[in-house]
Image (cartoon, rainbow, N blue to C red):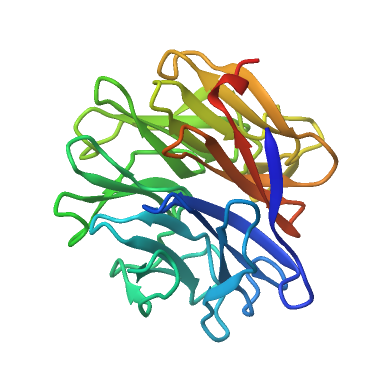
Length: 323
């Protein structure tokens, strides 16, 4: 396991959060995150860096809307084969329905970008985790309704020309789904919650409909998670494996747990059981909001918030997961 810092805060960008990572067609890695005085501050923007093979390039600002806070970015190779950046921008109170989802595209591997354009003609939709393309060609972008605090999915059957917003039935405070396609075509999505556990929802019709969210035995500290299905079939989940405690804070009926340690968990049986994997961080402070991908060379990449002042990148080989 190797690790390096993607970014460390400075006077202009003292805090950072919500990293995303993507492999380009060139084999290079590119990462983005939001940074500013603090989360939700109107000076925040989205920064981007590329991995050169031995270091991350100095960050460049790719989204900075005057007096508007940037939200959780998503980088991925889009339906048209070029690099997409989904860039949330907040035009109201933070996480209370004022977010608009914009998209920018790069035709030269992240060197230059198109202007912001609206992805969805509806405010209040956010999300955290990467999209997936199903084996059928359908695209899914995991999101949530900011006001209702319920998971949703943007779904496209026409290579991203149009997107349908698909709701998920839910009675709890559940957000930020991360989704994988299992061997039999079932879609499994795990979600962050405010009640001490990860919730799940499933689809057997390529994301047209979803089961009602239900509680799992996996703990959640009301912080972001992410999941990937490796080419070998293993599922890998990144989470703060933090059980609820009596001294957890409760705000408006929602539990807030500690954000350390940050762990990997592995499932060899399509999510039926989970085995503990490597611990990425276990010191004091916050280690949160991970994003995970598998590269074309088989290496596993994780990026996450390091104490709210840095973004960290960890690289593992698959055989390290169950040592």
